[in-house]
Amino acid sequence: MSSTLQSFSNDLAAAVELSGRSIVAVNGRPKTPSSGIHWRNGVVVTANHTLQQDEDITVAAVGGPNLPATVAGRDPGTDIAVLKVPDLDIAVAEVGDTASVKTGHIVLAIGRGPTASLGVASSVSGVWRTWRGGSIDAFIRLDLAIYTGFSGGALVDASGKIVGMNTSGLSRGGGLTVPASTVNRVCEELVERGRITRGYLGAGMQPVRLSAASSGLIILNVEPEGPAHKSGLFVGDILLELDEIPLHDIDDLQAALGSDRIGKTVPMKIVRGGRIIMVSVNIGERP
Image 1 (cartoon, helix red, strand yellow):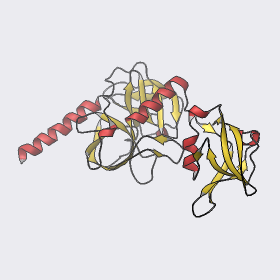
Image 2 (cartoon, one colour; image 1 turned 120 degrees about the horizontal axis):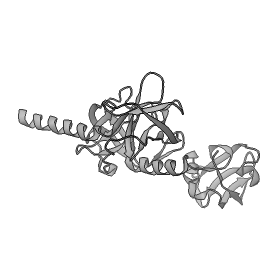
Image 3 (cartoon, rainbow, N blue to C red; image 1 turned 45 degrees about the vertical axis):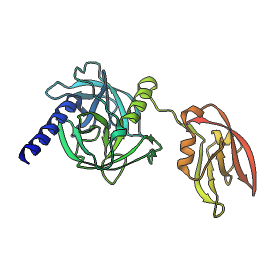
Image 4 (cartoon, rainbow, N blue to C red; image 1 turned 135 degrees about the horizontal axis):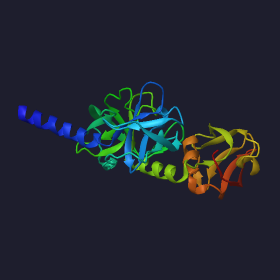
């Protein structure tokens, strides 16, 4: 038994050592640094909510100096910020497959230091949307401690591969992980464009029940000169479909307003004055 425990302990220490080579401290807020991952050469990802300034940001590897970093872009929707650190000379993250993480798997949270926390993936499910509209490729809730300064650090599987970025900024109920596939997607767009583009109607809405079997989104306000206003939508109109996609709640609308629809004119089915009619709307880009 003792040899088995010793072997398990050694494996965990090896996983921490392997992944910890890519973890940095991020000095982007007063007092307490957060964590970051050297995701690509000269590119560090961290938790956006911990980055409380846009200038005078530094990062530091274990035993290394504070290096200047510049903000390449932020995405509050997924709580990802990307920093450019051209002088960072440490190992790039060995990224694993988040799809391999199952409920009950032993995982490690690695923060600056490096420091480690051991636990399990308590819940793993499919695509979900954050309260700020970001699309996350998988829902991964952790049963382990996300200590102060751990946000922006790595979730590590038993092989020592980094399978996502941990954050306490997307849920009040404990730590969540933004999977590596989402980090890759957001990181690429932020490096290339400096922002995440999302579609935009320029109208405030809420779900409304039309019958026992149907529902839609009723418009509560319309922004002047926004896409909805220019398309002739009014307060009281009820949106049923956007480009043939049923709209039962706000999540449905946000999912339909992907960046691929920006600038395109699409059909929308609405209820106005008790009648179902079709209108065309040109999707804008969220400011």
